Image 1 (cartoon, helix red, strand yellow):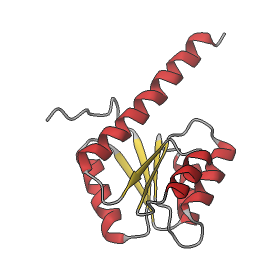
Image 2 (cartoon, one colour; image 1 turned 45 degrees about the horizontal axis):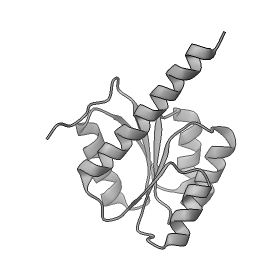
Image 3 (tube, rainbow, N blue to C red; image 1 turned 180 degrees about the vertical axis):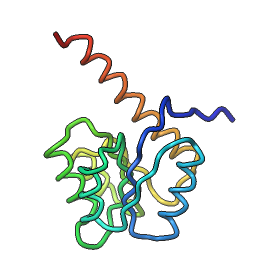
Length: 140
């Protein structure tokens, strides 16, 4: 299978309260060439989003302290361009619509297929790069 590699070592912030899944995601993404920063709850994740300046956030919804909806909304208040992918066991259409309306770029339900998740991450990063290039072309 042709697995796209990041152009440079892009940073992904994984905000996930399940320790086993957090480690699995970390290992998967590192094996695909990403630098991975992890956070175990919403508060830690939000702080890392601002201190680490990741190129993408992979965000669980059901977490202690701040839930994923709150984290997504707060990130969007400060950064309209940072790609946010929700990775969650919440499958109801209302949750998907809420997440996307709060500013998430994609919504992936657990259980997920690792190659599909990486493909969605690469697609979001590619869109961000293209938007950045277009912005630079029109900036004087």
